[in-house]
Image 1: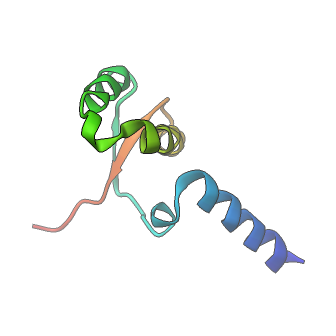
Image 2 (image 1 turned 180 degrees about the horizontal axis):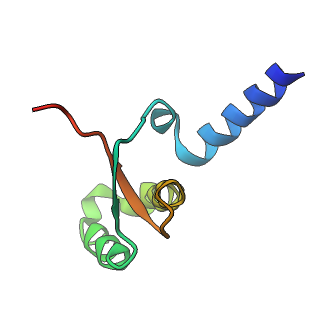
Length: 82
C-alpha cells in the first residue's frame, strides 16, 4: 500500500514540477517575489524561444521553490565548494 501511495505521489510531483527537479536538492534560495513579473516579461521578449510552451511550468516551479523557502516565489540553487 505504501509503495503505491509513494509511487503515485512521485508521478504527481513529476507531472507538476518536472522529473529533473525531483533529484535537485537546493542549498540556497533567492526570493523572486517582487521581481517575478519583470522576469516573465523579459523572458517573453525572447519569442524565438517560444516561452509560452515552457514558462507556465517554470512558474509552477517558482511557486514550489517558494513554498520550500517560505516565500511566494523563489529560485533555487546548489552552492558549490570553492
